[in-house]
Length: 268
Ligand SMILES: [Zn+2]
Image 1 (cartoon, rainbow, N blue to C red):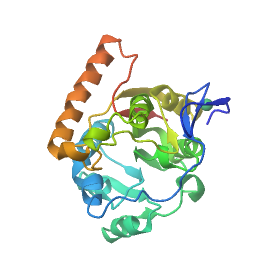
Image 2: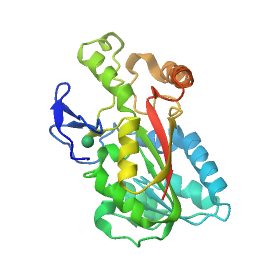
Image 3: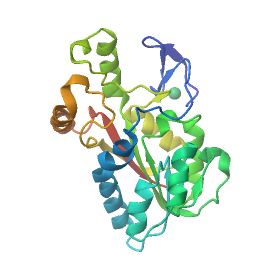
Image 4: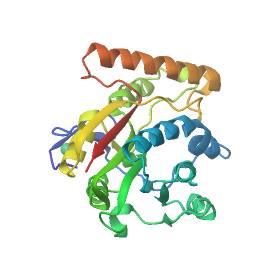
């Protein structure tokens, strides 16, 4: 992402010595393959509270609303919530089966990676990117393109997995720590970002007023990573951990982000 030198970190993963981006040596491309029946929970129910928080934030920044672009819009769940509040919403979705659902709901849906699509520059008030940078072909190019697409003063709102949380978990998982529970809690993608990595990427793309915080977890266990712990217990553990991460954040004066996911907002 930044051109810095990378070194092997753990099995199959490398880390950049400069921006600390962690990436897979062998990248996997393609839509995530969830077990049948999980998608509704992953894209809809589990994120409903997060979408509401996002739109509350954007509504405050733009009381008159405007144009919103959701990257990785799935079946248009966030688009529908935004449209109900008066946003002119459109999305980017590479997975055709999901894109068809967003189109059927009446939303303009672009089917190519945003950095290749040549959308209208300086046209959008807000861009949302929920858990997508980690799976992109070229996140740095996409961040630059999103900056170009926003109007001056436009806002980018990002949710992304936190590598500072998932890497230690991945190590424990490799060591067999979670086997007794049948759980596989770490989430590792092609690209894995720490707070500082996201900050560096946005600064290089011309964003300012970059603010980062721990994200609330999704509700329940939509990805079924908790195994025998079940949905309720996994969900409860996630909430408990979120407050622990918040405590760490306060006690380190905002220096340490331990949350499983991060929320990043910035202005063009
Ligand atoms: Zn780097």
